[in-house]
Length: 288
Image (cartoon, rainbow, N blue to C red):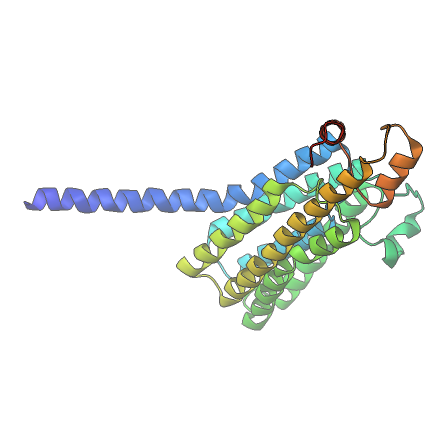
C-alpha cells in the first residue's frame, strides 16, 4: 500500500468520524423532542390529560433554564445549549395543550390562584405558566450577573442544580401513574424515548468532556425510567383484568350510567373497540 492510498484511508476515516459526530450532535438535540411531540398529539387526539403529569414539564423547564445559565459560565458542548432551548419551547407547547384539555382544572380568574401552593403548577391558564417561567428566568439571570459568570463556585452549584432537577424527571410521572392508575394517555413513545434518550445521554456524556454531575444524575434518571416502564405494564394488566370483569355484566350498554360510573371510579378510559372486542369474545365463550 503506497502513501497516497494510506492518506486516502486516513482521510476517509476522518470524514466518517466527523459525519458520525455531527449526526450524534443532531440526535442529541432532536431525538428527545420526538416523544414529547407524540405526547402532544396523543393528548390532542384523546382530549384528555389524565395519566400525564404536568410536573414533568415543570422539572424540565427549570432544569433547562438553569442549564442555559450554567452553559454561559462553563462553555461545554453547544448541542447541550440547543437541547435546552428547544426543550423549553417544547414543554411550553405541551403545557398549552394540557391546560386546554385538562377537565379537572377550575377556571378561576382570581389572581390569588397563583399564591395558592396547593394549586401550584396546576393553574387553569397557559399565561400563568408563561409568567412564572419568565419571572424565574429573569431572577436567575439577575443573580447570575450579580454574582458573575467567572465565579467557579456559583457555576458549579448551577451545574449540580440542573443535573439534580432533571434527574427527578420520572418522579412526578411515577406519582401520577400511581394516583390515576391510567397508563393509556401517556405516550409509550415518550417513555421509550426517555429510556433510549437516557441511555444515549449517559453514553454521550461519558464520551465528551462533560461535567461529572451531569453524568451521575443521568445514570440515576436512567434507573427511574425502568420504574415507569414497570408501572405502565402493571396498570395495563390491571386495566385488561378490570375490563374483562366489567364486560361480564349481561346486556351491558356503553351508555349505561352504572357501567360508566364503574369505569370512572376505577380511573379507566375505555374505548369502544375494547368493549366490543371483549363482549364478542365473552359471548362466543372464548376467554379474554
